[in-house]
Amino acid sequence: MARYKDSVCRLCRREGTKLYLKGERCYTDKCAVSRRAYAPGQHGQRRTKVSEYGTQLREKQKARRIYGVLEGQFRKYFKEADRRRGITGENLLRILESRLDNVVFRLGFALSRAEGRHMVRHGHINVNGRRVDIPSYQVKPGDVVSVGDKGRKNARIKEVVEIMEGQGTLEWLEVDRENLVGKVLRVPSRDEIDIPVQEHLIVELYSR
Image: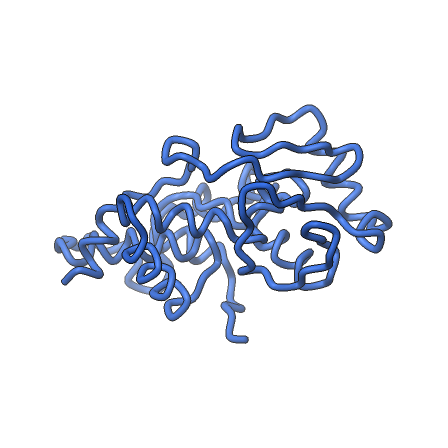
């Protein structure tokens, strides 16, 4: 499966905002956006006028990068969102939020979506008691997501749980961090999806 392998800090700099792709590092002085608040590359500090298309493209790229999704898969998600009843942009964000790697992150079992994806791929996550190693797996209301026996012995997961101790969780999720078990209560509403993306611009881009 194709995936992005270069520095994720370049992605934040390209979008001109923190996308929190590296977990803890994004909150420290080592954050690349804090140190070099301009786009990467030799022309990164040039001021350019952004067109309407460019603005729409940047919103789409920002959403892709936040969730760690490549273009082909993102386009499939958009088509699925467009088929569903309701507002297409909000449907798209709900599909992205329902990815298993994102839910693992939202439950506080990982400090970033990339770390959640790593946990899923290495077989540390169960859904309804069965191991699932597909990060894009779509969880549904009522699904129980838990860390498996193998993952409970993992030192990194124990460290993350200690860091997240006392932290709250979103209302559409229920979590028991002591037992490393979470449950999806319902589909999130738009105001519960706290990402800096204007989804209507993505819809406009794909509607061209």
